[in-house]
Length: 320
Image 1 (tube, rainbow, N blue to C red):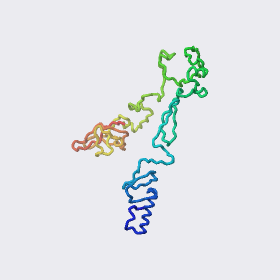
Image 2: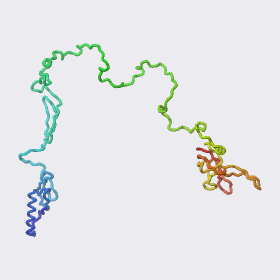
Image 3: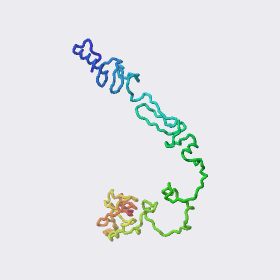
Image 4: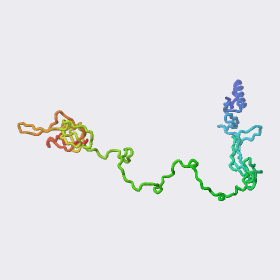
């Protein structure tokens, strides 16, 4: 890389020779960035860029195009025309114009023929009539006067065709017949007894609209005698119950509360005779038996207004 601010008066002789040599090499390479890396160039320095394939000029801070175009007279060839030219066909054959700049082949698409523009008639063996007027054309084609005969001059003969001779027939009917077009239709529609598979029923509800009654349930298990005596196995049955947790905060229930049967035990009544007389008391049935299902408390009360203790015995109904 040559520093173009050197040599200076302070350059030593060995350095002086190398600095001059480096500048000469940059010039011989046309300052091409692919082959040299000069520095401190004078504003207006011109270089050739082999990568960009163009001449550039140094502005003092950056390289720019030396010119946008060049008028060069040399013997050679161009890969592409600067200004594209259009090519088209007119006259006996017409083709839309297509731009041509020399960079690629072009194809002219002939879309119309005009024999009147031709210098001579197209012969019959080339697809023409070989004539310039209608009468001669018919004669050349061996038509005589047939070409000017009206279709009304030929009477249509009544005839038939088999189905296999009909082309373009649709594979299926294009519409259903109207009721008036249906033949041999019945005059009455008497209903007959019949059944339908479930898959043919539409609008069936996704879920049942009500729970079945106990009598409607089939294959239900028999109630064991030990549970029948307690009277709480069926939904809707009432039972006198108490909390299995005793007289604690967990045993406090209010009317309307929903309680799992696993938190309740069945209660029985018994008479206790003592010195002061007989008293009716309540106690859990022994052994303790928790209830099945889910229950709803129907009442709540207190054992004594003075002690303010929660009554742990309730009347409940089984709801599930």
